[in-house]
Length: 128
Figure 1 (cartoon, helix red, strand yellow):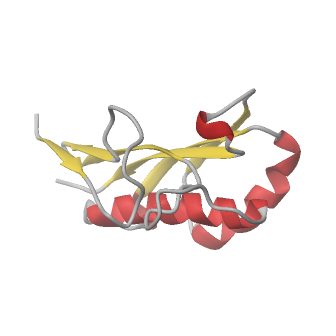
Figure 2: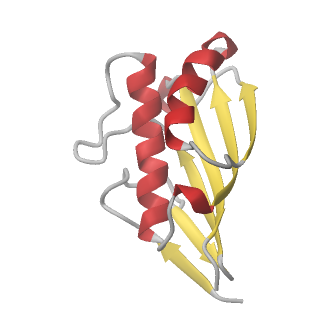
């Protein structure tokens, strides 16, 4: 098994004992990303759409650090504290995944780290 830890300063530093991403035999597992600004380490303020953009930019930075792009992502899991924001989420998400979007699940949860509104994790195939 070939295993490599993926880290980039363009995504937030982990806030616990985990890696931003782990690349195993061409498969990249991206840890859940919340709307943390990698430059400041602070939560993004502003609209829900601003927070979604920050989360997806964090995911994008990690997949790019592994040598891929958003097109390499095959599965996304989205956790929302309020499922009524589903269409707002989709509006921004569709700007990132414009062609052949990955498989996806969206679930409503009662709480998330740091009390944020959303968290997104992803799996990508970068290749061997």
